[in-house]
Length: 161
Figure 1: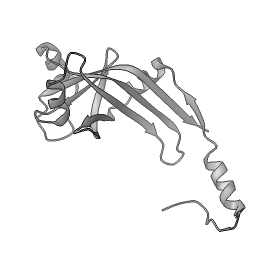
Figure 2: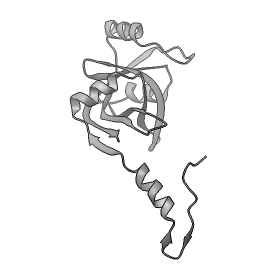
Figure 3: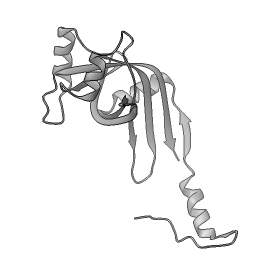
């Protein structure tokens, strides 16, 4: 359902009520976040979306995460597309983007952070055990793998009135 007033146009004339509503809705200020604040906000939530390439097309998956020593950690299951990609990746890893946000649905204010970097499979047994203790899956899959994303590029924006 759309809360906008009815818009009626004839030629180049636009309904003034619609213009006033659109201007009011667009009156939010967008402020760029610095890296430190963006990572702090990312660490304050537990759900995000990972973007990677699968069969030459973009793929997006919602996942829970934690921020540990400035890196994004997610868990996945054996056979998952991203786990398979990272298992067969070269030393640099797999390029991914990770996005998380907190936007109020009523005011449309909040923030959004995107990190882009290389994703690697966690292979150290002690690290894997540590992440399994800290990061619990939200689904019924047996999450046997952990992935580490090094945030090379961090961008963020805060939307406020």
